[in-house]
Image (cartoon, rainbow, N blue to C red; front, side):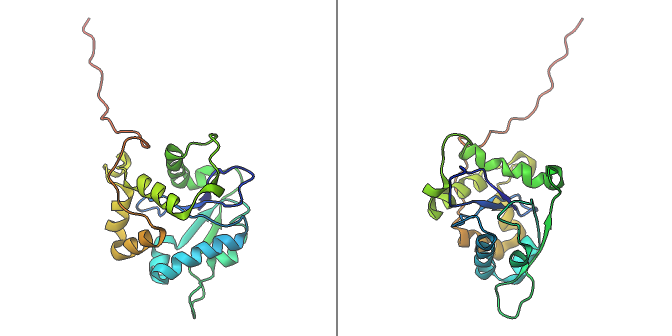
Length: 195
């Protein structure tokens, strides 16, 4: 879990989740900066597709020491009756982003669609707009995934549970574009010059 770079004055926050096996980028709009807002968003996801599926996809939550995920108990506690724990939260050491390298790399994907430092306010965003942005980002093929789109990988890896997750966040498969993601070009070796 990580947080996007918002304007300091924004009330809404956008923590992102990164299911490692399929490199899907999931952004959640939170109404505030409190740890309880993160727990509420995770409660919504857990209720949408159940504890077993939640544990398969997010059984281990690796995060930084930011303000939003600072309280581990509500993150780990299940919202479903009779269930004790839905996941385990682990915190990276300060200034050690390599401890969650895949998440950091995947964290750059939204900046292709929503570049930093152009004045985008997440207070102006609606859940439908975030769902459209995540649909676009997760529908573009990635070279590191043999040109498979993250949404396709999520459905292939988790089937109906992946579909329930996408439905709960309003994410749909769309036609891939090259406007927000770089196009993949095969590397060619330059010809040697004859002497």
